[in-house]
Amino acid sequence: MTTDIVTSLRELGVIALIVIDDPDRAGDLARALEQGGLPCAEIAFRTEAAVEALRRIADEHPRVLVGAGTILTPEQAAQVGRIADGVIIGSRLVREVEQAPDPASATRAVTDFLREARAAMGRTSADE
Image 1: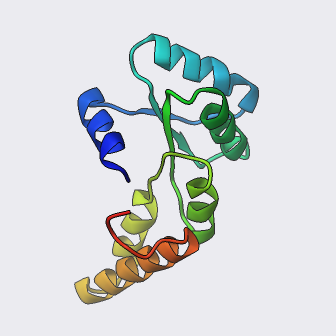
Image 2: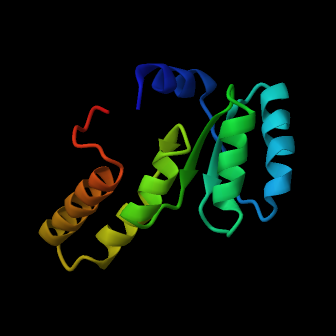
């Protein structure tokens, strides 16, 4: 994540979380966020429309920072990484910790997933 994105997120202080069923509404949502002074959204990867909505916002509203959350697989992270400004993988990390039998296993599971997701996205350095 670039310094500019981090700075923008800090200045905004809040990110709109969007669960969308109709990608045709993505442009209206992005426009409303931008006009309302919150040019930032996380598209939750909970519906079939999420990828197309993400793509439309990224392509049609370049001043809106857009990312995706509820990313559960390295493949989803790679797909989103090609489209969006950011990828949020907290749901998968929480699942790994909850399902681990002990703290050491949780640490290994989280580390392994992060490594797999970064590799799928074509990244190897933690500061990209």
